[in-house]
Length: 281
Image 1 (tube, rainbow, N blue to C red):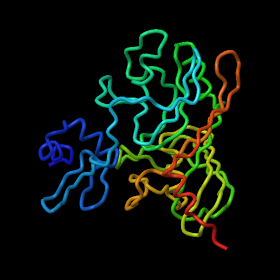
Image 2: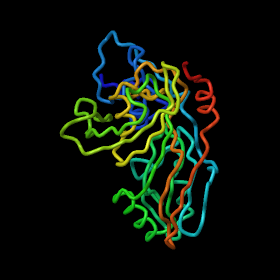
Image 3: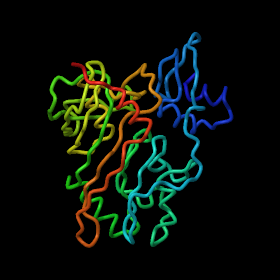
């Protein structure tokens, strides 16, 4: 039986489509290992478990707004929150649903106000539009690489260089379609980084992606042997409570030709982990 069919059969309180989302997001384990493949064919001896109970149950809430005017809203996105639903109908609250009533004109799509995205597990700065012309303006800046983004991550391991540019193309993994990987036939992807501190076992890294490929930072760090702590997809076996990746700063031009830099503090749970990393002598 396929994994998604198995989950819907034995845990019918969730639909098969919901289980597919939970599988892709890393909430299902096969033989104590996270499996993100909905079509995985199970053997008779496979042991299947889930940890949906650890998934944030977000129905509707007021997000922490960093900035708001007539054209944009900048939000400090918590970890565990979707930027937008993949389908037209959403079964959970998202940044897009928060933005829906803030649009100057009705938007019946599943992405009202969304001009870029953060992975569900990533926290931090996300900018949204309130009208169509602003949406086009912001999207073009992302496409033209005129937006400057800064992330902070806690990783397992120590990068070989304190400062470097990772310039490696990325493509979807054909064997695991929900994942991506470094691939010579992929699209160009560049991430610059610098190590802020390390104890020789784990490190705190500042990252500035120059492109915006799906899972780019996560894939690049995994490839150099320093996967992000708490990344259930690219760091199997991690026991952290969350993905320790935070979008700390975003520089962009908003309407009326204002170049702005928006930032938000590292969440307390992540800051506690960072504070606990004492540099080795």
